[in-house]
Amino acid sequence: MRIEEQPTAPKRTTKRDLVMRIAEETGLIQQDVQAVIQKTLDYITESLARGENVEFRNFGVFEVCERKSRIGRNPNRPDQVVTIPTRKVVKFKPGKIMKQEVTGDIESKPVDS
Image 1 (cartoon, rainbow, N blue to C red):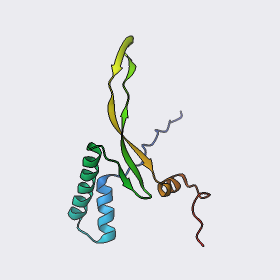
Image 2 (tube, rainbow, N blue to C red):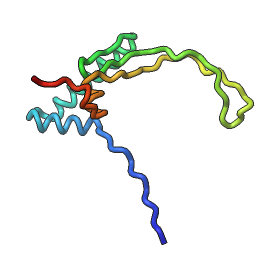
Image 3 (cartoon, helix red, strand yellow):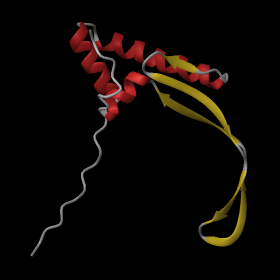
Image 4 (cartoon, helix red, strand yellow):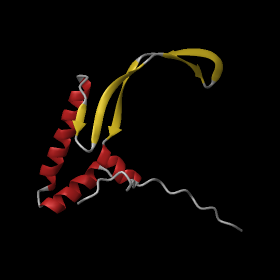
C-alpha cells in the first residue's frame, strides 16, 4: 500500500514575523516596531488610494492601474454573459536588486572592482 504525500503549503512571512525579526536585530520593543510597520503600510495604502505611485528604490514600485471593463461568463451557466465593470487594481513591479535576489540571476549583477 502506497501513501501519497500531501503537497506542502508555500512558506510565507507574516507581519508578525517581520516585527519579531526586526525587534531582535535592532533591540527595539516589538510594539514600537509593529507601530512603525503598520504606519508605513497605512501611508502606502493612502497614497495608492489617491492614485499615486509608491516607489522604493531597488525594491520596487506599487502603482494603481485601471482594468478595462470586459465581458465574462457565469461559470454555472456558460450561456449567460456578464459584464465585468472597470476597476482599479494595484500592480507591483519589482526593482532590479529584488529581481536579482529572487531569480538568482548572477550574470546581470554588478561586478565589484
